[in-house]
Length: 373
Image 1 (tube, rainbow, N blue to C red):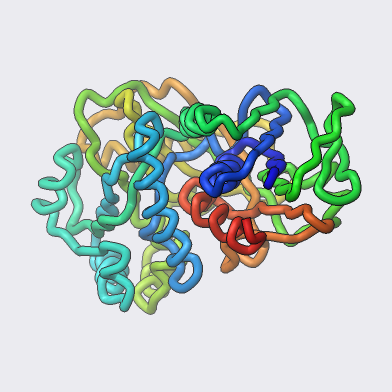
Image 2: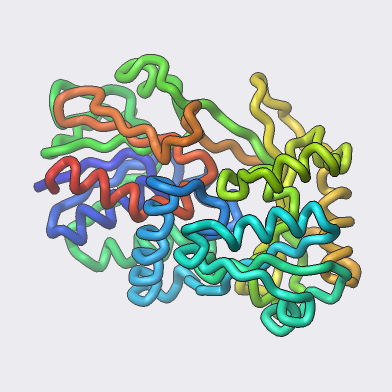
């Protein structure tokens, strides 16, 4: 079988990986020299802890298993089974963490409530004041800026993979074929469009208006911290954002403890991961209303700096990068991904909604199974 994959972000790359793993030939087409969107502009988190139960959690856990196996084969991914800690302060935040560890699926997530001393034994860099911390053993990380490059190198070694950069697919031609802006037609047994947040042009032509929206965020990265940050770190605002924490205790937190005004205005949470070079990737904000701003604003970065410094108990290293990014999210946020047959032999897969890095291996596996690869 020959599979044509359009889009070289993490979702597209994992579809190529699944096809090659199953013995098929892949032609992978990307309009840039390499992926430049949300697949690079993220935390690199394999984030199980906040996922909703049912299909979303099952997908994340399966993806976590697949990531670990791929990481063992492709060391340049930088896969690390580091887990995460969410420090909490005050009775209301503590109540949400206690409700989380009481969930029926808490063991599957690796939840455990730690004292400050236990949390610092896991992550000594957390020297700030807090009352407890929610530990999630199943969370992990990879290096987002290099993951696609590492996977592509492994795919090329198979001898069944061709990467075609600087080609924008303009048209679906009949069945199982696409035409790019060089005028070349690429024909296979299946075509998978993994175009991420690019939902106009070709996608609108072949699929119409899909139930997917675009979300913009701001993030930053620091100079190297002079010590290991041994886990990912979140703050209690993440409880308000992720569906796993829905509970009466969360209702009490929302009613009784307002977010910082900047955090509320920009729909913020803290997520933080240390890169292999020692720098800290920190974010993020959420903007849903179009048209998006074309610039970044400083207040969210100032808020994140204050929160991080309060947890580390020390000044943040110099910020060396700031960026904005856009990802695609199903408008029904309970759906893991939008998967649609748009023509015979042609499928659109998009909209994981900030879960692309976490869930992409399992999303691609499901596509491969459904298409009978």
